[in-house]
Image (tube, rainbow, N blue to C red; front, side):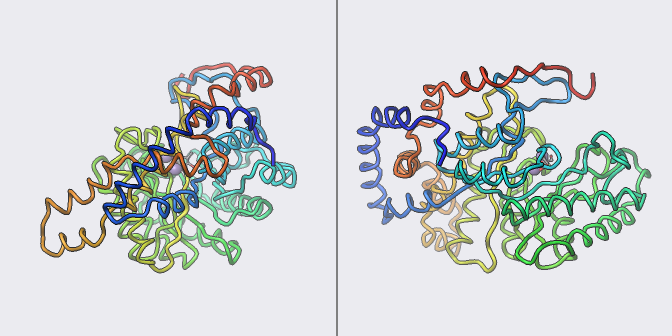
Length: 430
Ligand code: LRH
Ligand code: MN
Ligand code: MN
């Protein structure tokens, strides 16, 4: 096992915080016991939980206006995996990485898999990319991909998805996530029905190539890059796709892909009820698909999503097995710090959702006691579960304080001395 951060640094950092953590854990345990909750059982749930890191998240993002790269930007997929290794080592919450092809240039798959194994990392869902062109590509995706009016372009997009499956097979992945940017910018530009028919046909060809133990996740998004209509624009369309394709097809919910004020937790409940929730792209937003850090804007909404997930987990909802992945873009922070913090926010929401007194909630719902039902959720959300998260990390070799430990380790300065500086520049509109 390759540790990216020296064990001595992690241990020294933990030693300075261990006594305080023990006292905090004991005191929280006592308070939870009064509510009939065994703190160790929540800690075990948290320890067993994992969220995948997006390979595209460890580099500094950008906007269409500009990109301001940080120091030590990863040069290739191997550097990205090392950064993911840091995130998992310190948080013990991110055991897998989700790749994006062809953003990730993968040639030596055996070496890649070995590198992952050495870092204690597996490979989560593969992401295809038919929303941008690569040099030398025969057919452009300017006017769409899987729903393109031209059959050869659709075929090329299908082939790309098949290639992603093949790469994933070699790496041990078990799922393909398909998000397309197809849509239109003008009323009349595209025939809604024909475009969706073409998309379904193309996706059927992708679905037919899925190995038996694989799933395909289709990801909807209301708008962008198309600004008038989008082919896979909402969860209704997404549900239709999953139904049309078959039992291995599920809907992926990216938290940033909904109209403002949409009740995302209710969409999650609906998809669970009808056995079509495939997974998540966690992030946060204020205005649109902002890709802000998970839990940084509306942690209560994240908690309400997890309230639905934990409810389904506890009642053993049939076929319930969603994939959990982060999908965010970091413009002003060190991506490693953002991803560690985000993974911990997801764990926090998960732990808090276990604190909901579900029997009381059910009784308040039955008796239409709206205020107490809401207070029951709030009581769980207001509980500071940090000692549970920190203890779970500590007991599995992680850091009590991941960001502080990371800063002490000097990892960023070290990789900055090895990886050449990347020039910034204008974005797509300059
Ligand atoms: C689209 C999206 C999708 C892509 C990723 C880079 O907005 O959420 O998941 O693959 O961003
Ligand atoms: Mn996404
Ligand atoms: Mn997005």
